[in-house]
Length: 247
Image 1 (cartoon, helix red, strand yellow):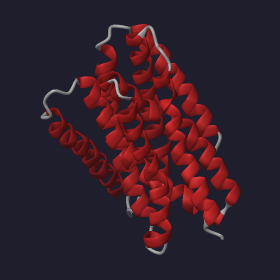
Image 2 (tube, one colour):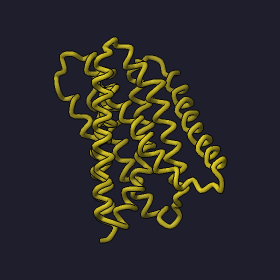
Image 3 (cartoon, helix red, strand yellow):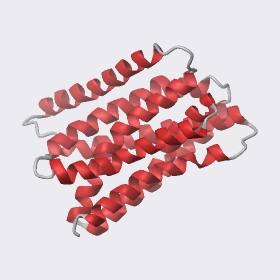
């Protein structure tokens, strides 16, 4: 029974991503403005979470014996994250017949799939050790998972005009969080180290920041609705601050 609640809490945190699918069921009249706002909201959340959650959480556990070693360790895995998302993008760009918007959605899907795995492990382990801490973490994760779900659902839906395609991708991304929890219990519980988690957090931060700056931001700019970029980014900052204070 002691593992049931940690798994439930991790699943709730992950499945909250599906709330990001809600906008695709409404008839949005000003589509370009809405897409611009949604993408800007998502990239803002990704950058803020990376800078003020993933990276700070990883730094105490790098485990190097010197400041120079810590810097090299961080630089190596952050750069590896940038390299990986660019490599994935290289293969996605080869796909013919798909719009830039769709490719942005798929890149977000892959980035957040990777992001949710360690989050699921952290939520499970935190709840396993301290139930109240796990609940607080779940609330914080749920708050920033919603705009992350939007970053997948909106581009894919408006590119393909398929709610099923959008929901499917968001659902798979959401499942990676309870999958991380399951891995934590079945396989990794006795082997997970703080340094392993640190490596993954830095890697994901590199992926999300690179994706936001190099892909999401140019896509938002392409609609020439600059004030909606500002609205989206401010909203993303507010959502992230609320989620961070919920921990």
